[in-house]
Image 1 (cartoon, rainbow, N blue to C red):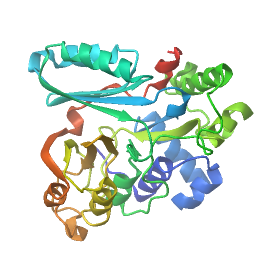
Image 2: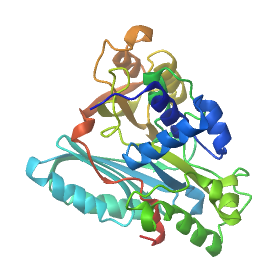
Image 3: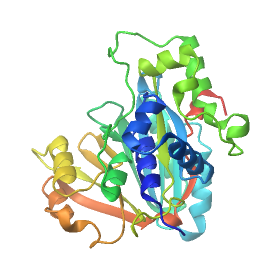
Length: 340
């Protein structure tokens, strides 16, 4: 596999950190000429290095996110991942020999309990754990945001990291979303899967060409437009590749502050979680790494495990190579709206 050029790494970083800006702002942030930016952007999409997705606000109706982590039997891993992906609430499912990991969007606490009960009865795993996260900025401060870890590997600054789910800017002042808004949200979330987009055809990237009604939903943060990477396909940069994914969980000890722990991880340990969530005192974190402790570790002044031990008890970690992770569902939020 060839290595990324410096320009390619910058463009990918600009896309991972994109929001509602226009292309001129992306160009300025990437620091590459317009023609170079366009060529690299199109290559990144066609090669599957990155993909676009719309992510809905919990205020549209999905107030609970159930995260599930199972240690599967070898012979049952594929069936387990398939079973999870067939749940209507499933938006993300990863399958690897060491684990099956999933995220499920649900409307009520009762739905969460029913789904967890079904999943416990599968019998295709040694053990299974759940985190029922009430979607809010304090309980879910980082939601699949990879801008931080990519910026660390490439030595580039971040713009939006850390990002959670979108929430309407005026809190609850909008009231319950109308049926029309929900329908339009479903249409927007289905955009990456319409027609030629599925076949990999190059098309206008980002929300700049959206209808006015869609732009309004983005501006009000009923939906956010995000770019997600596929590190299994992304070439290395300067002989460094993001090659391992780790899911860490434990219980917060008395007096521990999750916000303070996050600050220490980022600023002192130079770890940039792509997922950071709390279910009461139960803690869940996802992190990516290069698998090379020597590479880029000169700025790491604080070891990770002792830092976690200062705030958590019962720490457990499941780690696997990115190349061994099969992405069964990749941020498929349109399924929640019946627009598959």
